[in-house]
Length: 386
Image (cartoon, rainbow, N blue to C red; front, side, top):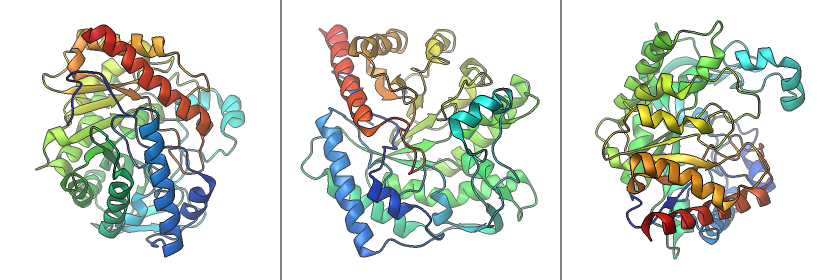
């Protein structure tokens, strides 16, 4: 994994706002259905444009925008056998309605509209889980490699959803226990993780439910109880990552991408030491939004592991305001002061389109935010090295 050895590198979380024609071909697809030739051509053209735009705005470590995926997590429905779609049934017997949404119910009705926001549809586990997604992964990786031809990036990454997020978004009707169900998912996802690393890309594990399940538990659990809950899920993830070099894996967590008050988020300090148990070389965490920006102080009290990289979000997906590059610089400098400049890569709080139809900001604003990310990194580099 590349480090900021002579300048601050830049990256993001993976999901980019999709063009309308990409959204159209990824929505409403039956589970496991392959793209046809016209759809593949559409994806290839758009991924090529997205990768070129990342080069143009100064991104050092790009993704393919997750253009082929219906969402950062539901794409797993295509790749795992043992799940089925139950029409009209929510994935967990009801939508994800955390304590924050209950407290601000009227506000969320205006913000989100659909009270089913956060659910995983009607997908449930009804049989033994195995991996069947090799063709989908190989097609994505080949498309991304083709798009990168002739462009000068430090490296590139491919996101994949973590076992805990898959588990907690889909009800189990087959396995005898939740733990057995969780580890069955981890065993299956090993294949996808290894395919990504073996292809030469950095693997990013997306695992927001490690954080957001705290909001979804009512009444709120104690910090100690929640750490135990999260530790089991980290154990399952490490089981899935076994044998992969840590320096080819990075781990992304967030408090959920939705726009809302977030008053019931778990404090980073309560969960940070559990997260750091992941066998990864880098950790991507929200650091720019107004609910969590102050938490860089956590790393003054909890020692960040030697040799690991932190990827703080220094621009936010939660606002249409475009960050000033001097603010981006200041956010980078905070982390460089605590963990060392070579251990910081400048990132983004979360993806800009976790589900294909979602636009957290307009695409023109997204690209301008990336430009300011790059400019802020240049200004931080000048101060840290010159």
